[in-house]
Image 1 (spheres, rainbow, N blue to C red):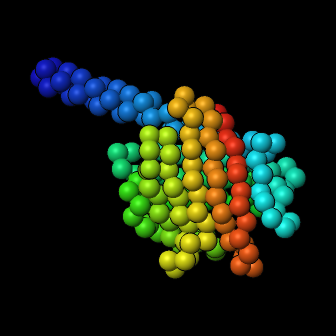
Image 2: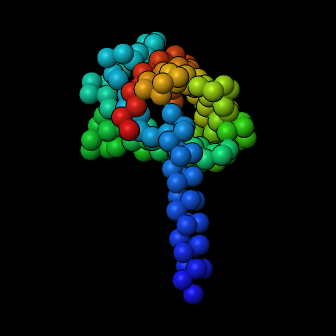
Image 3: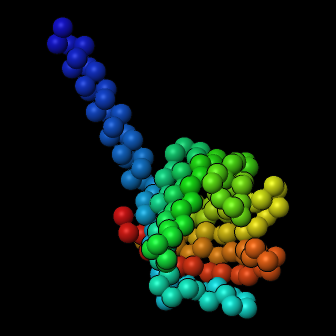
Length: 162
């Protein structure tokens, strides 16, 4: 009677340690906080808003990204983005957004990924992420189309906060 319980507990402990090891092995996993003083948006009236504050949480599984971000630049109106997508460029739904309804994420190297945010197949923003090999910093470069249809380049720097 004790033996099956012991084996079950051992299996659960092994599974938990394997899951933790896999998560710890991915240096891109966790919360990334924007560094406004190192970031820039280009174009007419495209300056970073005063008090710009953005935190992005990236959770990776074998072939999937679970993305969650909260922009609290205006604390009265936080802007939240959530999506789950494959890491192979497959188009996935981008729910609860006005400007986007689809997303595509593709890992392009050990420390790089491309993210396309789309509205009915039209690319509204193309992002190119570059993570430092030590997992401490990241840069997100991209081009996005404003609601008025004007495109602007941007470069946002992030630090890994956990």
